[in-house]
Length: 239
Image (tube, rainbow, N blue to C red; front, side, top):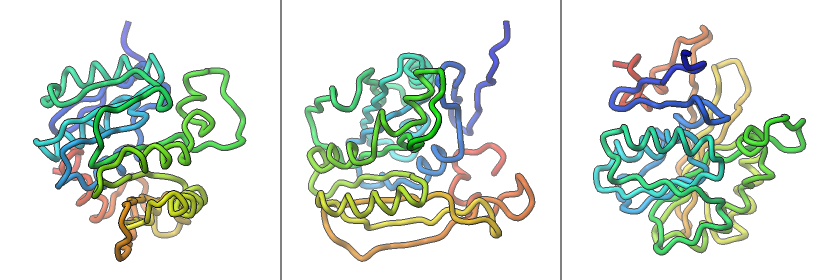
């Protein structure tokens, strides 16, 4: 029997997403492409899902050792398969654990997460899909608390969130001692309202670097040059 979901082919690797509750989406690819790991050595991807964000970092920096954390068993099946079959498998380690159960033995230079963001919305009948979609299973405040304890001195935390949650996250992060240093306002197209925030936090206050990104022109599936530039190293369609 054929798989209900086709594997997603990128330029240098392929992603199986047949088992994970949440399939390949724009948010994960956006965050994976936007995160700066140029000076990092140790990286943690919280809620790795299919492993897409972790693998993208491995492609970007050959010096990285990457831990990927995932609570859901079905998603772990996909993530481990994808890790095993990508060119950087030796530098990727999957941990089938919740964040509360994870006890790292090292500080991380970069912590990344595309956390669930549905709040007070109708729950699905699927427990796995609820974990993947609803922030009751992994709230950004929990990630912030973990990051402040487990980031290296010059380390960074990078997240993607809806605008309202991103604003609240920024306020809460500063209370913990994490300061917003880089921010990207993401718009679906030029006529729709902003729908996502890409956020990078540091333990050290710095001058905020802010940018805007429009994903599509006003024609569906016609992408802007900025989006192409950001994701060109990964998408086959942007040769």
